[in-house]
Image (tube, rainbow, N blue to C red):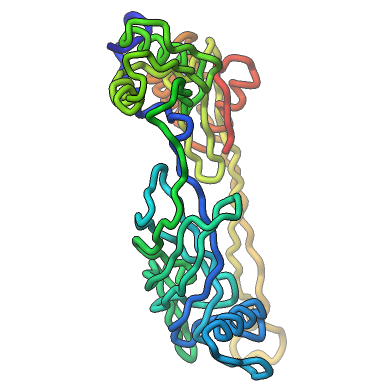
Length: 358
C-alpha cells in the first residue's frame, strides 16, 4: 500500500528502486598496461617515453635484453585499464574492463591487452585483465582524406578480467542496517521507515536524516538478513520530491516536477528582430566607352520587426503542472524564451520551486 497523501492517485515505487543498502556497492579498479598487435597505429616511442620504458621492462622480465638499442615499433600502446568490482564478487568471477589509450596512439582496433593487474583505492590488486579489444569506432585515411567514426582510442573487453581477491563483508550476520535514499528527502525517508515498521509489526526502522533510514534486525531474522532485505525491498512507498525546475541552457531542455506551482502573475513576451540584407549592384560605363570604370555600388536593406500584437497573458495561481505548461504554451514562446520567462517569474517571487541550471 502506498503511503502517499490522501486523495492523490500516484504510482508507488518499490523500496528496492529508491534505496541502496549500505555496504552493498561496487568498487572501482584501475591499472596500467600495454596493448600489442596494432597495425602501425600505436604510440610513437619518441613522443611517449613511458611506453618505451614499459616495453623494455616487459621484455627484460621475459628474458630479452634491449638496453642500449633503439626501439622503433609502432604496434604497441600504453593504456589505462578500468573496471568495476561488483559487491560480493567471488574469486574467479569474470568482469568487463574498459581500455583507454594513454599516449599518442591513433587506433586500438585489433589490439591485445597483455596481463594487467587492477588495483583498488587501497593499492591492493583485486583483479587481473587480459584479452582482445573490441572498439566501437574506426579510423581510415589515405593520401588526401581521412575518416574517423566514434572513438577508436577507447575499447572494451567483455569478461576481460578475473577477480583474484574477494572483499570481506558478512551481510548475513549484521545486527543493524542502513538504507540510503538515492534522492534524499525527509518525507520519503519517513515513509520508507513507516512501511518497514508496518510490515514487521514493530518500530525497528527510523529515519535518521533525509538520506538514511536505520533498521535494527528483528530477532526472527538474526542470521537471515538476506531474507529480511528480500521482503523489505518489495514494499511500496510513494516517493516525495521537492518542487524543482531543471534547465539545460545549452540544449534548451526544461524539466519541471509535478509539484511546481506559480502564484498569479502576468507575462508579456516579444522579440526585437533586426534583419540586414546586402544587395550589391554593378555600375559600368556605356559600351565602347573609353572613360569611366566598372564599380560595385552597395545596396543595404534594414528591417525591424518588433512582433506587434503581443499582449500580457495572465497565469492564475495554484495551478497544476499541466495547466502551467498549457499557459506557457498559449503564449507561443520557444523553449529558450520559456527559460527566460521561468527565471523572470522566479525573480518576481511567483515561482514556488527551485530552479537548477545545468
